[in-house]
Image (cartoon, rainbow, N blue to C red; front, side, top):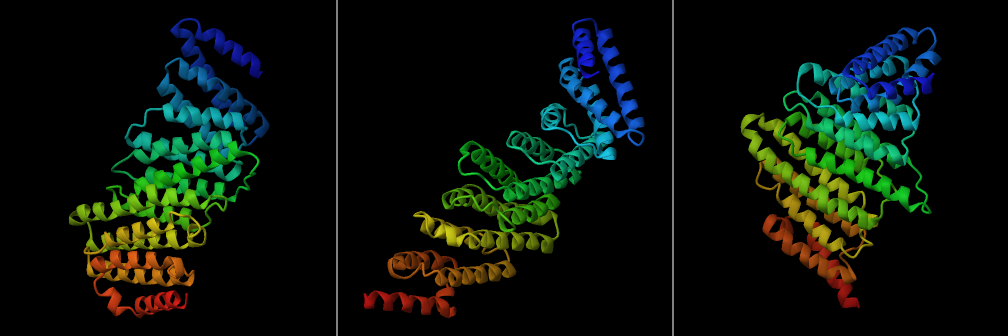
Length: 376
């Protein structure tokens, strides 16, 4: 009986250390019973897991952190084997406890982390993420991106989970009447994006590469349609542009200790992400007053890639060509946009000195602008 179990535990916690040991034996017996009942009667296992989850916060209060870690591990093994469904409150309890466990970097602990991440993945796949759960989930996963400098399996799995969560949030149909939920989901999505951005300049090559892949899936796959142009401007300026600038810096530092061709692939992937994350949202961005500033900021960021290698120089130049052509298709340089075109050339000429003479699109566009002004 769930209530009786809670009463027993509550009374025991007020007594001697022997009672704490008794609780641990009691929990171990429940775990054994749940594990043995999975394939016989899943309903019994589900009830036992419910009792255990209600007990865990009290067990943590008894300062038995190692016992808590082992208990959680066994609960997760049962969940992973049985695919039992938990309630929102039960998931909240688990997510509140995981970050409190010491994230030590030993082989045993890392294997536990992987198990925890499997359960987090299971919860995302099989459970609707409510607004009360989403932030605790992301904050928990953030802790796992920090662990294991030498063994990056946990970090890579964590980054993939963040991308998956962002995709789940993107599918949500946000009700404009409920501003609270909208703000929570936006804050959650941007927090996950910020974590991915920060990991793009990780010293570990595999982490850096996978962060870029996940960030591209998040920003250029199916981003939330309910994010406003001003919010996109903020994300690009404060998270995406700075992090992808840092990719160049960290690549220059680590190239000496890694394969140069691998480093160049990272830079190429980063450059592609930089351009596509901007291009995808041009229809929204051009409606915002700050658009011109963001556009010029983007050129400066692309300019930071110049000088790394001939291949990256060519890719950066080609990226600018494509950007200008797309911008031209939206007529942003015509009429009132003449000033933006002049500012664009003034920024481009020092970075790409041959660009204004070698690329016809620049000269043709300038003629269009001049002709438009003359007609007026």
